[in-house]
Image 1 (tube, helix red, strand yellow):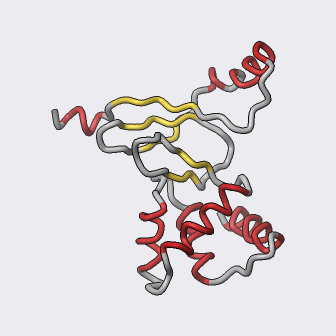
Image 2 (image 1 turned 60 degrees about the horizontal axis):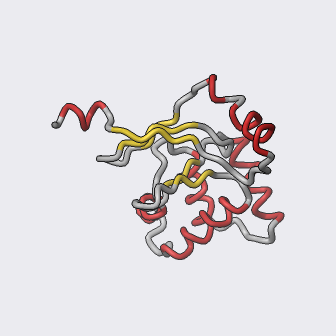
Length: 143
């Protein structure tokens, strides 16, 4: 995580931004969190150590990181966007339609799919997502 943090910090500085303690805290919450937090969850976590951090500051740095391609935005359209800071490479997620939990999964058989789509349909991708929607085991147990 330390190398990843240093690389992203350097890229943010290259964009002309100072790395304030608040921005560093936001970055640490994002890249160290496997739970795919929302901006509001990131902000809540950062405010524990930096109570004066504004929600606007959190939104700005998350937006910057997304634009730089350093994080993935997972947006289902009916819920607040969640962010994956562990890897910026497109990968599949399991998303519970009840509790909205998001889990990273590794499905090797999907690895060649983007290239197949490019070859067969001629699209040039800007981005893509593989999301599987369903009801997680924990929510199934509460039925």
